[in-house]
Length: 268
Ligand SMILES: NC(=O)c1ccc[n+]([C@@H]2O[C@H](COP(=O)([O-])OP(=O)(O)OC[C@H]3O[C@@H](n4cnc5c(N)ncnc54)[C@H](O)[C@@H]3O)[C@@H](O)[C@H]2O)c1
Image (cartoon, rainbow, N blue to C red; front, side, top):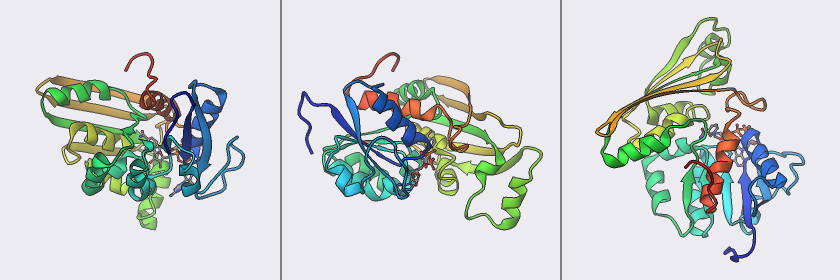
């Protein structure tokens, strides 16, 4: 559906959980002038978020922009269709793009445009610029989270229990960003975003540490390339609504949305 130049930008949010509900609330408050939420789409009843909950196809008929805050499956199943309808798409579940075929399909799909939110980390601006100057040769990220947030459906009872009762930091994964986002799809979007910026998910060396003392979720990033050497550490408080997600992420999504609709502000 095409937007008239003078009308507001109509946003559909897929996923009315910790990130999506916060994004809808901000847009309803008018935090992004000229951008209005028109519907939320969710596989579960989300309660009253102040906009109607619709099925995806009905919601897409109303959308200029879709904000995905639901999970990798939605990106895999619907991103190309959304872009082909001429709807712009903001992706939070960046791990979906570790699938090289899907990433290619999304890159070439249109006329809708897509953006990935920086989400829980910063520094991606300089890393993107550095990668444009010449390939990054080293990217490492060590992510430290509360153990209970890292329990996965594929873990056997023994491994899951080890995490639940951990009293010391435990390394639960070491490998590349492609494998990391497959095994920890809701917890390692940061690794995937670094993979996208580097242009190589296999280059990114990911270490995931479960630490019962980790009140803050920590991402320590080291990157190197012809442009220079970069080290930064991000420590975020978990969202009160979902301890897997950092509380800052909805605010990152709003900044990304502002850029996508052509109204960026501040530092970019
Ligand atoms: N880029 C980042 O830094 C970053 C950080 C945190 C989370 N994320 C991504 O954002 C997603 C949402 O995070 P959250 O904390 O809001 O999660 P959440 O679990 O609080 O909410 C997710 C919502 O999406 C809904 N949902 C799941 N699958 C769906 C589907 N196929 N169709 C429609 N609705 C569906 C769920 O019912 C739930 O209400 C995560 O899955 C993760 O992939 C990205």
